[in-house]
Amino acid sequence: MVNLDCPPPPGEEAQGKSEGWNDMQHPKSIEAAFAPSFGDYAPYTRGVRVDRRAGLVDTLENLLSGGQREKILTATLAAAGLEPNGRLLDVGCGTGKLAIAAAQIVGSQGKVTGIDATPGMITRARANARDSNSTARFYVEIGEKLPFTDASMTAVTSSYFFHHLPGDVKERALQEMWRVLMPGGRLVITDYGTPQNLLGHICSFPMRFDYHEYVREQLGGELEELIERQNIGAYELVDSFLGYINVIRIQK
Ligand SMILES: C[S@@+](CC[C@H](N)C(=O)[O-])C[C@H]1O[C@@H](n2cnc3c(N)ncnc32)[C@H](O)[C@@H]1O
Picture (cartoon, helix red, strand yellow):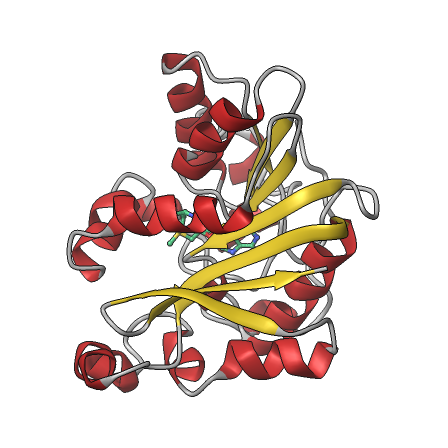
């Protein structure tokens, strides 16, 4: 899918922490036009894309979660309570691990879609899907402007996605994820968040120095506040890893 999203509104280019390749965000830029390896254009977002480290994200994430990445993805998927025939959207899907596992659960009658703002990630996710004969589909899109109709998903998940977004974009992404979820569906957000115990305070301590994207704000309960402000229902802490990588669920 070629995404011909509009260029950033005036003034927005200077904001946020988007890493490198910002020229790729304008679909008409020379670089975008001559970047066949990416396949898709990168849509504009103030979220932090991972163009230059797409191949490293899985490893880095595993290190940052004390080797528990697989367990965390499994817990996220379990919290979504998927059933055969289900329709799941994974936002900020990265290399597609969760979506590919979800596709096995929903079977041929269901549908699983992953979206990510980084074209290189989608290239990897599609290759992984091909290698594992998966029916999961992957597109370059942004979480804050989802190209899906209202109430079209039985579950929406995201893992390690929200900390890539500045606060106001987190809010828009949350609204969008809620909009596409059908009544009775589950929204599952797994990310760095409020420390739950002493271990969580210790493990999250380095993040307080703001070295990693927009994590620091989340350590102070930003995601929970956002959910409360949106008035979209009570959230439930389903699981926690290292005391601060939290799996939160809200049922619509
Ligand atoms: C740390 S990775 C997590 C990948 C995967 N969910 C996982 O758990 O392994 C965060 C992903 O969010 C994506 N991202 C950043 N801003 C985004 C946006 N506005 N919309 C969609 N994806 C975005 C990045 O490209 C990156 O692939």
